[in-house]
Image 1 (cartoon, helix red, strand yellow):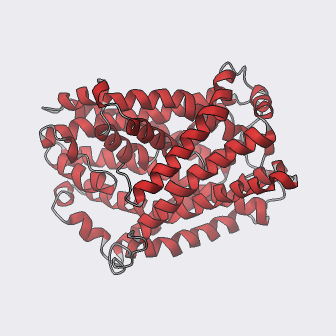
Image 2 (image 1 turned 30 degrees about the vertical axis):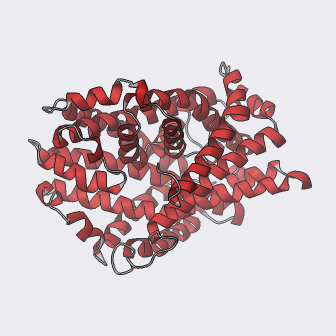
Image 3 (image 1 turned 90 degrees about the vertical axis):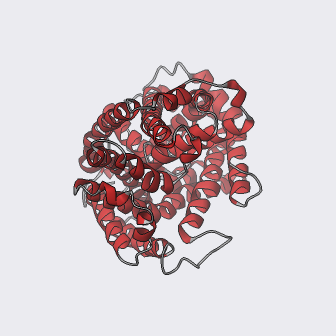
Length: 465
């Protein structure tokens, strides 16, 4: 893929990350997103605090590491985006059905992009308000609902966030994605650490800290494992074509083993810092009520503004928090759009510029109905879900775990674990080879199946997550 606006002329013209640090920061930027900020603290609070954190770390070292390394190695080995990577491997008639997994990996980011841009626009709006010193307005009852229910303003912020993403993608892999990640990821970590320290030092916050880090084994259940597994899966961009795409931009000398470990560590670090930011602050605000940690948008856009408004320096802390969330959302959205652009360049031989503009149009065309689904089109319900919730359910709960499961089958039944190990060994000592084999063959497939089934059943109301 050519840098900037050059034409795609095959894999020889493909953009490349400059090296190890560039790749790690770009992939970490993809992994660190909204799921770390609002989903992780909610799940940690709901599923036992410290015991959830312990299970999460254990699964990171087994289930997650194997899939990060496998998808990255598949991308580097083939030098293609998901469809091409799968198709180049599944050439015989018996296994041709596995090429379906490449299409799913390619479609998922195209579904996610529109509503992720919309939510990114919400974050920009709240950041702007905090910078204007209007944190108290954000904390008012009904403010968030009134904002997203408006017919035009959310779309305006959606467009601004989309333009920011497009400008970075147009500059290419090294000059755009890597440079942006090198700036935003360190700033994100600094902001996360600062807000976490401030949150943990509030009066009454220490009980939230204890709840978050001290394991209570009496609160362990099978749902703790399922929830931690699902959170890891969604947080690390597995099954979305992103790791395959970014792997295709990786130089052969970059150590896949170390890079995979570092990505997992950075993603988990931000998730833990998010826990320290959110749980102690909400505990102090709610007098120790874990139920105050509502999931999703309600936590970030309703509960936390009230928490910040109750603090000294609320505007400053609110601005720092939403700036951090903006960096997390933007780096993730960059990877989502890049996965889409890479697919169009590889499969249709489009230029980067043409592919980027086409996906920007798609993000706007589908993002507008998502936005109107909270206002004029609120009555539009499919299977009891609004437009945005439906898209998130299809992409996040159904297609991504299924795509990752097909990747395990592609490696286990067709390419062979040995071939992937050989690709990793080109730049790594691969001391964790044994763990990788066990993860891909025995751990990941059943866990992915459990995540897929439980997510679907939860969305349909048969079980509670």
